[in-house]
Amino acid sequence: METDIRHEPNLQHDSDIHEGEKISAMRAVVTGSLGGYIFGIAAVVLSIIGLTNVFPQYLLPIAAIAVGASMLFEGSSIATRLGALMEVIGGDSRFRMDEIGIGMTSLFLGGIAGIVLGILALLGMVPQILVASSIIVFGVALVFSSGLIARLNDLEIECRSVSEAYRSITREAVSASASIQFVIGLGAAVLGILAVTGFTPQILSLVAVLAVGFSIFADGTALTARMSSAYRKC
Image (cartoon, rainbow, N blue to C red; front, side):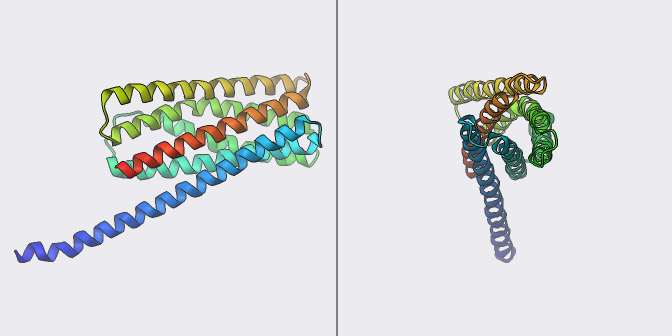
């Protein structure tokens, strides 16, 4: 009886530590997601304004920088959410971690490259070629990270007790979303290549940045809602 009484404070202390870590992780998720949303929206708005022929030579590289920053924030947010969930379910998860690692790496590298190329273009160093090159990088990053959504969905399902019907419907919906992101990434890469060759580079680059910015914003919104829900359930 005395042994049980001595252990109760330790259990309460461990619970408090877990709740503190949970709150810190959720704050990091919100911060990263909010940054991704802001820069994603900024890229979309700047691209639309640029398409109306209002200072496109300046707005285009700035929009490219915003897309790069959005990718960095989104990658950071996903890494935080993934780390928190892996601590809950343990290290014996059955889904493939390699695709998640490739997806997050592509987001980080694509974001860094986009920011650097956008800054150089904004400084006037062959801006059309550098912006078009950054769009190619964004497209490739979206293609490689498209499987990230499906893998994180598998993690959420593993973390929750749900019916088989829910599993099937969710997997189909997420698979469709991943396919759309893959198509947008592939299309952006093609537009970037055409822009590099000099085929109406400014218009194609603005359209590509608009599509990529919207894709990152939309996917980030869905991922935040899904992963936050999963973390609360675990």
